[in-house]
Image 1 (cartoon, protein in one colour):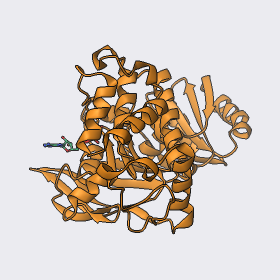
Image 2: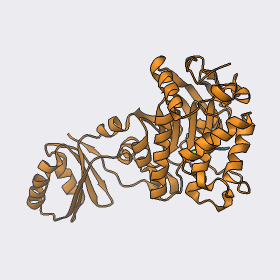
Image 3: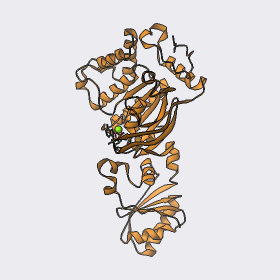
Image 4: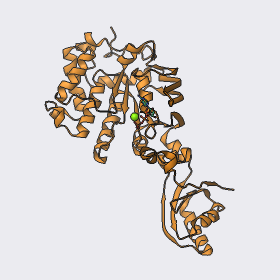
Length: 377
Ligand SMILES: Nc1ncnc2c1ncn2[C@@H]1O[C@H](COP(=O)(O)OP(=O)(O)OP(=O)(O)O)[C@@H](O)[C@H]1O
Ligand SMILES: [Mg+2]
């Protein structure tokens, strides 16, 4: 039988414990033991791809939800799929979780083929669905117990895991309350706990903080970071919140209309845009003044958006006085100026020509902002 307590198994065969038979010393007794295993899984064995995706395509009738997606995710990564509504995020993780069948292409999860070895894939993954899926008429503990039974966890192991996962998401004191009395944030935390009940090697979190207030979102971020730290779980998280991807993920795939348009660390993605963004509100004629700024030394890009001029610059502080000087010579008044570092939203705009938020509420073509991007001549 596979034993996780002494970490004798390597990650290369990805055998999960035979959960129905596990008890006593075969079970990870505490977080430090789990940490030992996770460290050995990562450090003692070669860090290998826990997910390999090869040219995945998914079509729903005439809609191509995924268009030739290829990707590798390594053991222990906290990987983000960032994209607007309809980008294909849920479709991708549904295929990896063997809930949906792809149209073409293939993928391996925990070194198991998603088509030929569905049961083994399901054993090694946990998933928190985008749509709520708790039983509201059961208590928190009963929901977890039910999930444990579905996975064949023995009674003693279920009790121990329930305690561990409830502690992780800070819900121990609410375990005997009906879920219908939980707040939105508590429900989300319980769903994360449920996804962890069977100690999955890979956890899919589909929009884990959707619709939650900023304070609750930050709490959930802390729980997600904690479970990666403590258990070494590989986490694949979908989100359309830029700050979430930026804060949590070691790497991000920006996905749009079923394609990966960029794949890198958050730092590298932002660094692509150069130094700083300078935002100016000026009196008319803004467009002609923007033209004037294109030639200025240190200016990388100039864009006009809703009457505001957006400059991508090196060393913004040095450029601001020269911008004012040019405005004076040109005869326009600058009424406001602000400077900030590029964020992932700026990266998305650069790559797709529109904002992530726009895509949620309207057809992109209808809401396409007036963007005049001029490269330095
Ligand atoms: N069961 C389905 N039948 C038909 N079309 C579907 C189905 N599921 C998804 N789609 C379409 O596939 C595309 C991708 O949808 P998907 O749910 O994967 O996007 P998403 O990135 O998860 O979006 P969101 O941020 O809104 O959750 C969309 O155009 C969607 O309408
Ligand atoms: Mg989705």
